[in-house]
Figure 1 (cartoon, rainbow, N blue to C red):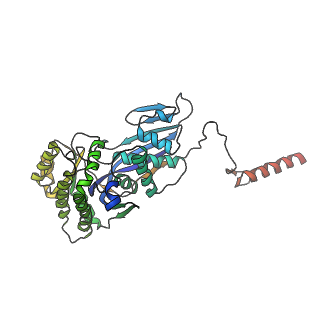
Figure 2 (cartoon, rainbow, N blue to C red; figure 1 turned 120 degrees about the vertical axis):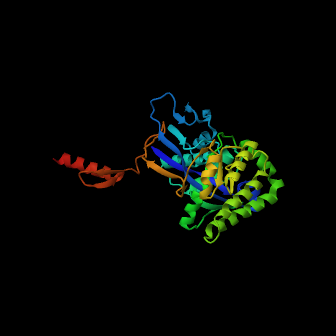
Length: 371
């Protein structure tokens, strides 16, 4: 059995510049972090006792014998991509899906990590991110950026740079106390409803050509935010005010990124003392994040008491295998090839391969004949 643990992410600046329609021409930049809410994927090979070959447990339970019958597109394409058969897979996540925290990409990263691990294959975080992007954007045909897969794979507070030639992850070198103060200044709330981001992402992508100037400025805000965080002499509250400016720009990319309900929540928080904030993900609902000075947080939480407050802490590990118990799996109709296997001989007290074992057996047989 394999169990992987993959963090969710929150993006502060640069969302929209990670669309290929933009970064291939202008280069993209995103500032984001992962935090201590996770997606868990369990994978093991399914014993051949059932009238189906694989069992897949997600928002529903699928029991199938043919990969083409899998209804969940990401699971279906991942199993086809890595030639996975006869498995039981289950998936759970700490926070609701479709809520702006990159849950689908964390699932993609964690699932691929589990599939490689059960095959006994090592894969780097960089290659996991690339495979997850290929899975979601190419094989599943989903519209969107490419920051989520990179963030979930690598973990941490990073600046992610992307252009036509690839991506680069630059961890922010930030004074530890300052990083804790940043974490402490961020309040996360659930607006009470989730949404499918596909329609919003399609509309946002279609508007990119007309919003190049705004996106170029949003890209520069990433570098300005980095300077605020890494310069311990700068006022950290500048980060919150920059979030407010960035949110006003992001709203202009697509009328569906915000709603009257979201606007009303944002105004309530600002009046109660928040310096800035943003809806996470594509927009339209899900989670909303605010930067609030410590002495104003009680006031903001009272103003938003009708919303669910979710405390969190930054994390740095990224996707990981937290349980690894490999299994010997032989596809149906295949014969075991033991040429490369090894055994421990208790009598001799050492390991041997197939050739050594055959020689030892033959030697023992000859000795018995002489007797």
